[in-house]
Length: 311
Image (cartoon, rainbow, N blue to C red; front, side, top):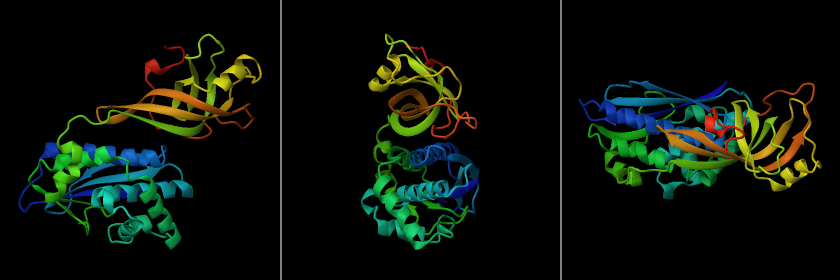
């Protein structure tokens, strides 16, 4: 298993304790931010969040970002998620440069992230963070600052990969309100999001009725079965006219562009609708075919209303 630690460090005023409700809400916002960042990088990354009482005068909200795979691409995705989260909590938008990201990756706060990496690998991660991650999880990060700003006992915030250790860079309380942005003045935040993934799924049940193009096909991934409307009109026409044959046999796989719409419920993102934008390939089963060949969907069971045949 590949994993990397990441801690949100809360610096407290001398002799004071943080408000438990504020810390709890900040912990939820912190978890949502890491979840959003990790999901954009790689939907298969798993998160484990725990709470740890740090050294005297501080608290640490510790996160373990992990993947069940041991391949190098997953390790790189985890490192990128750690660096992206650290950048969001320590830099402002205008400060996102490759040089600033490299500075953090080679600081005392990030030894686990850069361990055994070459200079080229470090620069590749820094470039990815600057190019792709600046607009990810902004609302969630602002929510963290919006929560801690409400507790006068919290005088600073930092991020480190060493649990309980005071980070070298602490964001002072004087910057909390500015960094909270919309979270400081608005209660309503984004409640829906849509992502597109190219994934391989197993065909469980097709819809062979030309009169019902909006009925959902039943598909399956490693997370279970789900219903999805097929929006690829050429593919549907080929199936209905017999130019593409869908055999009555188990284990047929499809390589597709899948649009996933999610809704935030109780602070967590949950799938609410699936749509297949393009069908790249329909493959017959092989003797060694696995039921779920390629993980690609965010681990979440679909709702009952999102099944084939429901309109």
